[in-house]
Image (cartoon, rainbow, N blue to C red; front, side):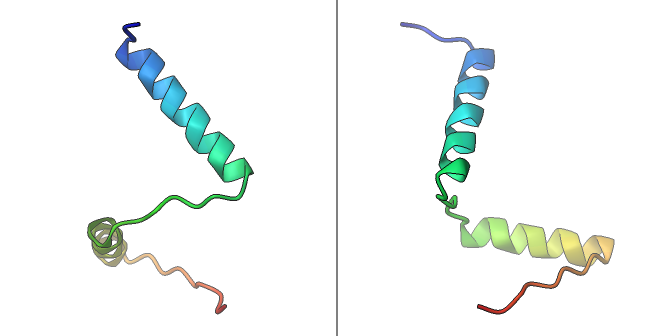
Length: 52
């Protein structure tokens, strides 16, 4: 069965939502973390993260 890009996006979003509801956390790569940190520094955004 062929699917369109729009349907693929909806399926991906549905799966991500379902996993989030079930308590699964998506894996974040080091590259993504570095990009987020660079963007936060560039925009001067500070986020506090509670300790475990």
